[in-house]
Image (tube, rainbow, N blue to C red; front, top):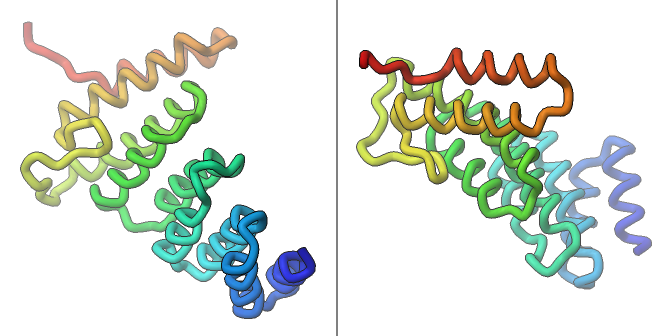
Amino acid sequence: APKLALAFACERGGLPEVAEGLYEVCLSTDAAYVPPAAFGMARVRAERGDTLGAVGALDLVPTTSRGYTESRQLRAEVLLSGGARDLAVLDQAMRTIETASVDTRTRQHYTVRILTEALAVVTGNGAVPEGARIGSVAATEVGVRDGLENALRSLARDANDLEERVSLVNQANAVRNWSLT
């Protein structure tokens, strides 16, 4: 516990290298401190732009931990904030959220964020590999639009506020695939 407190103090005090070292010590010495140490290490690594390192730290949180679901959400956040907009990163973020035990509304919010980014990628000038996927969604314009529309409509169904519901339905209609028949 003292090393974890010292690591947090060093992190807040502008000594990220020292904090990371102390978080590593906590990770390797006491299983009770793995989740908070992993979260701390992920913050330090994400702050310096080490997306892969931050994701690796969050992957250290065991599935039996109370913090596991939060680590999955943070993992998706780190992947989405990494700056690199490619299908592999978006696929990882989507798979992380799809396998996390989060509530439906949270899952749909992440799905909307991820598929909005994916739509820009698949409609851009870059080539999309044949058979590519973003989680359970095909990485095609039609597949991404369908997934995004479904997520937005799901959010609209659960919305309590009429204005929010109308806005979400309008967004769903804006990304909807249109047929000629």
